[in-house]
Image (cartoon, rainbow, N blue to C red; front, side, top):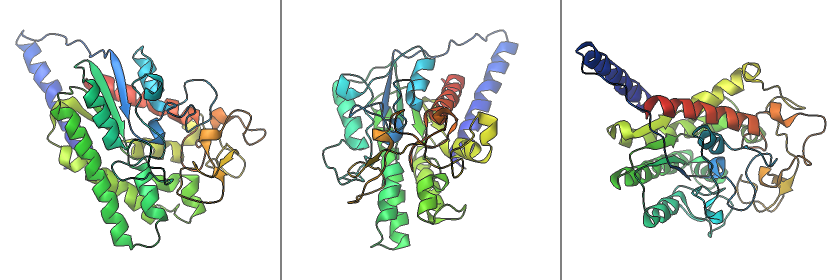
Length: 322
């Protein structure tokens, strides 16, 4: 049984139980959980500015999904480097070091969780965790190993992410949102390396990572919610017009950013510079294009509209469970 299916069954069972209580005169309306803080762990997808900038179009607005998610609760989220509770950091892997760009100073997701637990878990925290994008990229660009080894390493990274979720739950966390990897085969980077097909190895690695993350957690109860980002971003990819996404020159999945960076591109270690949204601003965009109608900011990470749409989706899912 898959994790999302199990969650659906648990929710249905809870609704049914509530209906039975109400019919017996013993039911009552349960107030939704209102967190006092949002705490986030993860990679560039959830980075709210550990190094100053974010991995999207840096326009000074709410432009990362977990910011939007937090704002819907009436709260704000700032980077841990600025004394906030946003631990996520660009390019980091779940456990392995160095990160995908060869940097050993950034905290892996495992280290982020350790830092938070050391600081003191609060029962009223809503914890959000993602990971795996950098692990999949790192394995994909490592052409010295076999396809079977890449798959094994990615699956281990998925299990490692599940371990971090379990650490939070075992420490007493009551509300944890786990976000899977979106299918990297829809990214401009995948197209550029010939991995844009539905049956590509990159698509398989994304799927297997998510499966490996979910399976160890199927019995962790209602304190954990899994958000299927792969399904949601596939909707954005396949039905862009339904979400107000149009495109850029060269197709709807061409990055809107033009700024480049050699040491922080997010797509592996390279001596040459690549388009990187971390250094992208409203002044470094494809001319004549409204960046608020594009899907991707750079070869891997979403533009602000896609981030905000996913943040709203994640909030509605969390609000329906917690």
